[in-house]
Image (cartoon, rainbow, N blue to C red; front, side, top):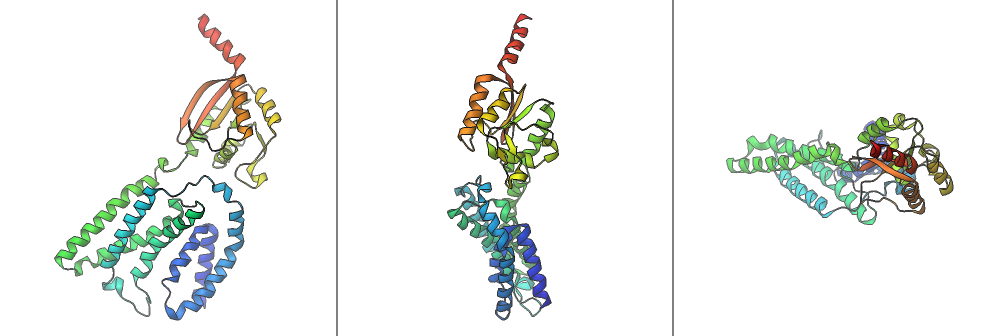
Length: 329
């Protein structure tokens, strides 16, 4: 009983911290020995019941991840190649110590490692056919399965015949060669669709008291959540209620007439928007913001960061005076 209590507690904690960890329960269904299936099923049901309220709340707020796009052909292809390598590696890991089953280890390493690598990603890709949820880092824990297979295959190499040993080394080397670029890419700022750190640095550097911050799209206010201390002292021209008060990532915006009045009275506006050519939303409020900027302001400076841009606008009268001063010199 105690091991199942510990297992259920750990799985519930994992699912609460990261809801897609629930896909690991599906993996375990393929691994549990027959004599333990009933105990596992009861424990899994209790875990599912414990995480169900959080899952329901998450689904009710699923629009907050509406930025996730459908799985691309290249993502399918990359996963298929790595899954193929994992299956070949599982052959090399299928005997020796890694393949032995005993009362202390009632299933082989391959039995847990291969499903752990393949199933979470495959299931999330299938779910994404209905509603896009697939982001590679959401199921990054599945790579533990591939790492186990690589280790088991390397451990078995001394037991193989010379020809199989050469083949095994080649397969392991190719798998590692495929993984290294992806691993480095995931850890680089470019792997994110936007670089909120650079954005916070730019806003902190350019903002001066009396300026106004304007998020062209309400959805882009979510960028401010990463560094609340940077954005706390800045005047958000369009915001009525903060994301915290609104219980979502975007906050609640003022009616268009009030936003327009605030914009007109601003000495300078720092506009935060997507890169040129990309539009997250194009509602009436966003078009109103663009019209006011075009009619009453001049863009003085544009600063590009990964996945975003900060455009500094000054009132036309101020900009015209500055231009006249420069021409007179």
